[in-house]
Length: 463
Ligand SMILES: *Cc1c(COP(=O)(O)O)cnc(C)c1O
Image (cartoon, rainbow, N blue to C red):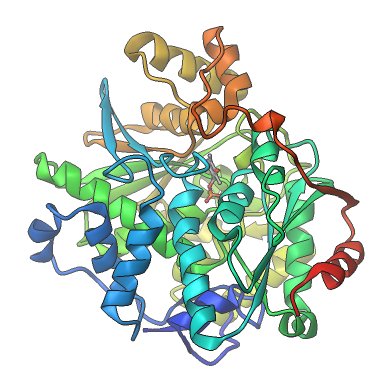
């Protein structure tokens, strides 16, 4: 399996290079040259597989010549850090199906991908004898999950930019209290989009990128998307075993990474297994406007909400979906992305029919988010985090005559303030979060200026 760029400007590369490359060298994103499909006769056998074994089957469709035993070992090590034996258990809560993705070490779904990616990076670096400097931007959860995935690993330094004061206090502590020598936290005075733009600038400087062996942990890394495809198939197979042929998923969305993994899962599975993907947005609703009106345009500044990991205007994985929406026409992707970079607008109203075959969307307000946390708690005694609540609300509004799996992307204790607002009491901190505020922490606060960050990196990067 080889990988190409959404913008068509690179020669196809194998899986290991795609993982190490992160962003394609022509500024596009990497995708498999062809998407495999899963033979329907396999589904019965796959229904009984453990999460790890299913991951082995799904990932091996994409990993090319990596020995199966090596992949098996990487998967086992990645998911041994999860606190639940099923890794991502599917729970029934009243009429809802909740896919709990937060049993990893930092209590958000990003651990599912980043625990695997940390092991993959180490594996590839061992093979090549090289080193890498990871640079990434985070709206909160990616940073801690990425840091946790690579802390203390040989041959890797990690630089994580987060928007100063815009993550939850616990999210900031989860990053800044990791004081391993290879971990560098930078709080940028600006928004997540500012931080992300700096990362893109540094990546697109090919000299800088080559000299410093930059690596990506943002969801622009194909291996992250791939790791997330597994839990969609896992959840589908659970419901299939209970007699459902067809399901929907509701996905709280920011960077379009998680829901794009759902789109890949939809295309891998036989037609109709995953019927619709419900895109749930908060007040930052550019993606909901895209699905409902074909209008992908930046509208004003990012609005801070109680679901900060979705406070994003420019969804970095959207380009991957465009590639398929445009029937794999990379020239058109390139032209539209360049137009968007120049104007902040993309008119996709001509594609609406096609989009709405796969997606439905709803933007959920702050009031609705809090009310949903309260309602589900009062009716079922189950606590949702605000991101999950956005997805649950969208599912309640858009449900049709088949089950909807709501992705639970974070543990409620990570966003205790919002939860307290909803239910009037504090959430008990799980052991992974208790006591964080008493630990030593390390963080550099800097202006949102790519040149400042560049020189900081030059001083602290592995060489
Ligand atoms: C990152 C994150 C999201 C959004 O995921 P994307 O892949 O960016 O769409 C939703 N919820 C939580 C808790 C997150 O950390």
